[in-house]
Each structure stands twice: as C-alpha cells, then as structure tokens.
Amino acid sequence: MIAATGTVGKFPRLETVVLLLVTGFVFWAAHVYARLAGERSTGRSVDWSEVRRVGRSEWPIVEAAVLPAVAVGLSPLLGLGLSDTWWLALAVAVVQQVTWACLGALHAGASHRQAAVESAVNLLLGLVIVAAKAALGH
Image (cartoon, rainbow, N blue to C red):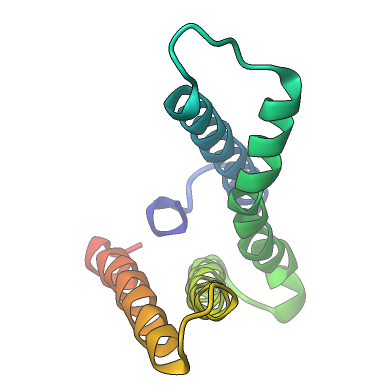
C-alpha cells in the first residue's frame, strides 16, 4: 500500500494514514472470512465464539498497519517531506516484517539458523517491494 501511495490529495499524510488503517482492517476481515469459510464443515453454522476466536487470531494483520501509519503521522515532526515520509513508512513496514518473521520462527521452535533464513526471505520480499516503489518513481 505504501509503495503505491502518491502525493495527490489535499492531505496526503492523513489520507495515507487512513488508507493504511482501512487496508489493514479490510485485509483482516478478508482473512477472518476466508478462515471461517475454509474451516467450516458442510452443514455446520458458525457461532460468534468462533468468529471472535478467528478474529483475534488474525488481528496482527491490523496491528501491522499501525507502525507505518504512526511513522507517516509523525513524519512532519521529523521535518520530512512527502517523499521521505513514504520511504520512512516503507522502511518501518519492512523492518517490522523481518522482525516478526524472526520472532515468529523462534516462537514456533525454529533454530536460530532457520529464523535467520526466514528473516532473510522476508527481507528479500520487502526489498522487492522497495524496488517496485523505486521503479515506479513514487
């Protein structure tokens, strides 16, 4: 999302913060729905306790949007222009992605080597997004 934002609009920082948070909620809702639909047995209805369980399980998707949104919101206090703001938010998102990959792997019982590999893969994915942003000239 950050890689695709432009500098259009009257309040580009505010619009980016709103887009980040709304996108986080939409992706969260889509994941909740997909898991509920995928886990449901034929003929069995879904109850609210199951919806809450899956919603809590998928909540990190929303949380992932918060730090980049905070970075965008705080960027004027750091004296950043719009272009630097988008790069800061993207850097925060990539660092967050790599960190959570490493911590998630370790929490799941992976060795330090496996966690490093998982972190490297996530860094590579993040760098692909950075390269796309640079290539698009955003």
